[in-house]
Amino acid sequence: MSHKSNFLAPQAFEADVIDCQVIGTVPRGLNGAFVRVGGDWAYPPKNPDDSVFNQDGYVSRFRFRDGKVDYKGRWIQTERYRRNRAAGRQLYGYYRNPYDCEPEVAHVEEPWRNTVANTSLEVNAGRLFALKEDARPTEIDPVTLETRGSFNFGGKYKSQTFTAHPKIDPETGELLTFGYEATGLATDDLFFYVIDKAGEVTREVRLKVPYVSMVHDWAITDKHVIFPVFGYVTDEARLRKGRIHWTFDAEAPTYFGILPRNGDASDLRWFKGPNRAIVHTFNARTVGDRVVLEAPIFDNNPFPFFPNADGTPWDPVKGRSYIRRISFDLNSKDDGYEEEILFPDLPVVDLGRVDERFMGRDTRYAYTSFNDLSKPLDRDRIGEGIRHIVNSYGVFDLKDRTMRSFYAGPTHGLQEVTFVPRHAAADEGDGWLIGTASNFADMCTELVVADARHPEDGTVARVILPFRSNVQVHGRWYSDAQLQFD
Ligand SMILES: [Fe+2]
Image 1 (cartoon, rainbow, N blue to C red):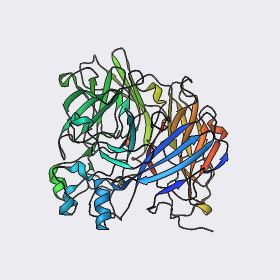
Image 2 (cartoon, helix red, strand yellow):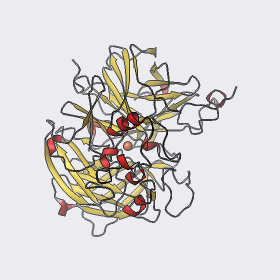
Image 3 (cartoon, rainbow, N blue to C red):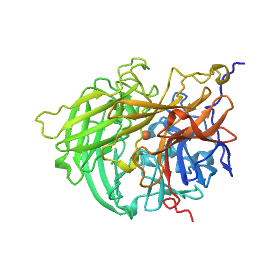
Image 4 (cartoon, protein in one colour):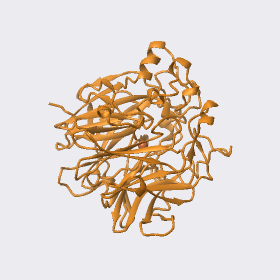
């Protein structure tokens, strides 16, 4: 019997599940926690066409111990969440537009106060942070998942904003990060930071971007950092009109700013190319005088809720991403770069990950999700309400350009994949693929575990939640020691 799935309707509750049901066997060596954040509407959005990026933050954790898994999920108690709860309704307007908020919570001069902290996570010096690129980190108690509040590294972190995708250098343990719109709404300031293992800000470089754009993710190498600037634009006038923060300008060139990690602002070099959208990256490396970036990249606007500047309707075909390799010649006289599509027949979800023990170094494997049209889909049990299905993880070999895949099943939609090494000294790619899946037929959320070396063998374990949890944006794997568990 066909039905209209209600899977993506809000799930406005918190939960603890002790010793979750498991189908299969959780690997004994898989001890630690998969922590994920995403959003949900505590109250319906003021504007029905608003971005899901504007949902209230929700953090959840699957803790693995000796084959058992416990789950905990909590709202992130941002100022905005608390103000809404006190009012009992939605006070905030379009994504990142204080002018569209009710006046008592507008905070036009302090837009970071309106964050929903719903995008990603990072740990530094024993602190767990929920991140969103419009604000500084929101500290979360790693054990209880209670919200501790906004964190500014002892006042030494000056940017008003902090990326959702900081990078940890695997050799130094340093946290490399940045904030764009660093000095306020629609400002062209981007501040780059290095924060050491003890949580001390050791370096700040103040940069200017060619135009104000979404700098959602970036990349590092052992010698350089790379900032993409692409397509999405905004300005004060647009925001004063009460519009959603971004519009996509298909005429805007793409820029990549490359800065030596030890350089200052005068060492920043901008490379320029045709219009693209680079929301996430896989990894990058410096090889002699070249910098190589690998990333899933879109030809055009990936998000239908950020309208095209020329008024044309969103194009889902142009909004697909393909895995590409971008090469920059640091000795070149001009500002161009080389671009190559590595898997031209396979559009992918752009939530790309690598084995993060090799962040900034040459990596063979990239992991992301895609929809394998050759695999069965049980539309009768899923219902018609879910249109877009992502049923597979891909293990992409970027060296020989082959791909192996994990298929989640005919009623399952996958969220972002995360790679967990089998043990600390395991070879690159030897480990587990984990992530949450929406079981649209049973209306529950599952966490799937597969062997990254044998993805086609299917799930090693499925951890079943007895309800549907919010959909994740990004998740990370941490050891008990990183999360300060006893
Ligand atoms: Fe992201």
